Image 1 (tube, helix red, strand yellow):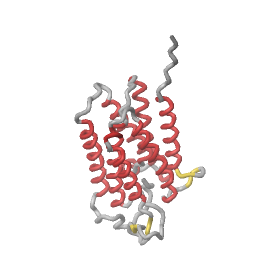
Image 2 (cartoon, helix red, strand yellow):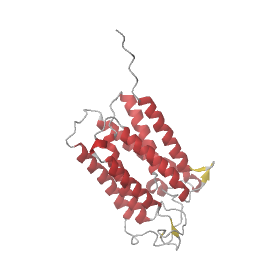
Image 3 (cartoon, helix red, strand yellow):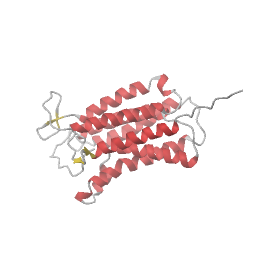
Image 4 (cartoon, one colour):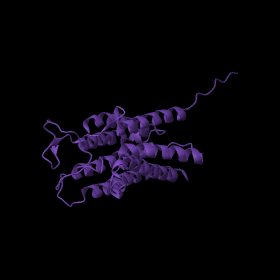
Length: 247
C-alpha cells in the first residue's frame, strides 16, 4: 500500500493503461481464498454456529484495519474518497482481523480454535492480490541498481517489493497447505503465518519509500503492534497445566 497522494505518470504500471489489473486480481484473490477454504473443509466436520461468526469478524475487522491507516495517513492531504475506496494495507488488515476474531470469540464465549482452516486460504489470497499490485504499480520499493529492479513508468528501476511479498506468500501457502499442517489441532498455523508475515513486512519496509515516524515507518509500527497482539493472544490461549493429582 502506498499513499494515494503519489503522483504517478501516465502509463504507470506493468499492464496496458486502462486495464483494471488491481480490481481484477483483488476479486481473484477473494475467489482463490474462498475456493481453497471450501476445498479444505468440504469433508471436515463443521462446528455448528461457530465458524461463521469467526469468519465474519475476520472479514469486517480486516476491512477496517486495512482502511483505517490509509485514511489517517492521507488526512494531511485532506479527506479523499479516493483514499477511502482505493487504498488499503495488508498489515493493518491482519491486525484488524485478529482483533475482530478475539473480540467476537470473547463476546460469544467461543473456545474452539479454527485458524488452521484459514491459514492457507489467506496466504494464497494475499499472493494473488500482490500480483494485482505488481501489475498496477502500487506498493513499489525504493530505487535499486539490482538486475531485477523494475521500471513502473518513470524511468527508475525500483525494488519489486510486490514480487518479494508474492513469493513469500506462495512459500507460506505451500507449507501451510501440507496435510499435516492444515489438519493440525488449534490455530497455531495461522498465528505462525501472521507472525512470520509481520516480521517479513517489518524488514521489507526498509526497501519501501515510506516516511519515517518516530524512528520507523507507520507500517513497521503496525507490524510491531501485530506481533505484540499475537504473542499476547498465544499466551492467553496457552493451555493451562493440569494440577498434580495426588492419591
